[in-house]
Length: 175
Image (cartoon, rainbow, N blue to C red; front, side):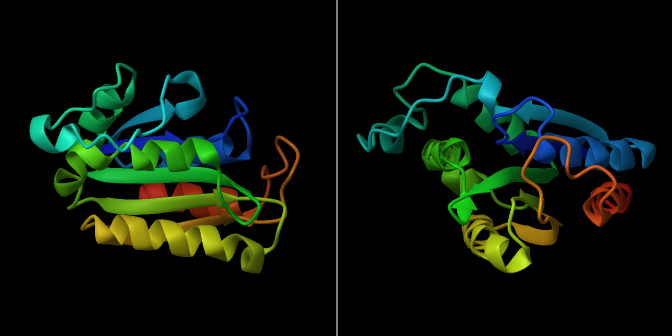
């Protein structure tokens, strides 16, 4: 049994990225794994101030929800990163969260990582976000196990009944 942590950067409750996370969770739980969905819009996450105090202490000086998020990410076996695309890349909520990985960046490797990327574009328009996230998480020492592309979706719920739903479910089931 593996511990799965999903970070959803959807700013909309039950938006397309969240919906795909729930499909992934359904598959993973059916396979016997435990899952925790962290919806970033519900968290208080400040911007990195580049003070680098964390290099000395291993903790960020900002008093927000990132310490808890980092602990859960560290303790997981499988990490799922879900984001809508904004102007061809991950949204600011996810980028801010990743920037705040700095205090523990050397301890965030060894995970199997799945990416869920949604947006109104076809895959060619979502590709930059996938490439960037792949580079970031591989640089941290993780292995990208799969990318689920929620293509051509804009309005909340448009991802329902698409092949991405099946892909997310089967990715979770196949952990």
